[in-house]
Length: 305
Ligand code: PSU
Ligand code: MN
Image 1: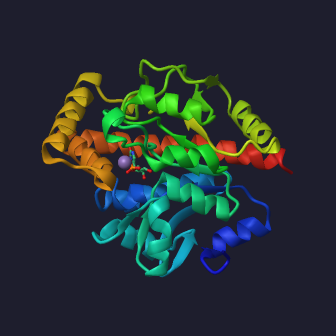
Image 2: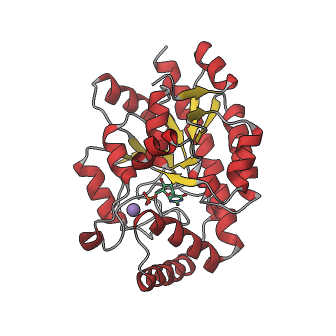
């Protein structure tokens, strides 16, 4: 395993000094946002993590290595190239073996974070059960990973390109706790709420870090979802989002888009149909997640001292 894992100097030093570390994914950079906002956001998110007392570890597959902590040039190249594979659990070994570049999804980032002994991971939105999954069986590998890998994911919920109700049912079956940070309902990424209740409302980050500690102390393997609503001033009107999502889903159906292309296609269409506003929203919610996620990482590090 050591042959595949390569920590950056900053991450290595953080480990030596026992500092909290926050994992960050690279699919959001390569496939989730346009250049140059993707690279700029990735850098700003890293800085937010530092400003709040932890060390950022953006994860990607490069040259046969799992890189934990990227250089500025690596961040730039992941944001600026069009030939970077979307890497989920299935793809990791092949991309490593063939020395191709891979942008890690939530599932793959969780795997790599766990290998590097990092328990907290911040992103924008998780994958889930797609609408119509009762016939397509399109269920993101992210959910299976949350079921077994010991990493907590701080996100703004999930986009309603997914079936949020079925996503919660699946997580319940797999024993994955879903927290709402200062909210009672599962946020729907661009909007602060949905019709679905979270399992636990947490008004403070302490409730979350102590729950995570108890879960892992008990060897209850698997992660947790900490859903943090987009800041009010960036939330988008529900009807605008609904129209964009319905139209994106219809086009995907007509074009027969499936497999790993489904999520990037839907995300791209929604972005196209909602214009610049959805990008502003996306950037704002990731930064907001970085603040809360880092507070949880700092809290957990204190509890484990
Ligand atoms: N949802 C978003 N933005 C994203 C993704 C999901 O709002 O960038 C990305 C994440 O990397 C997630 C992946 O892990 O898409 C899920 O893809 P799939 O549905 O193919 O598992
Ligand atoms: Mn899928």
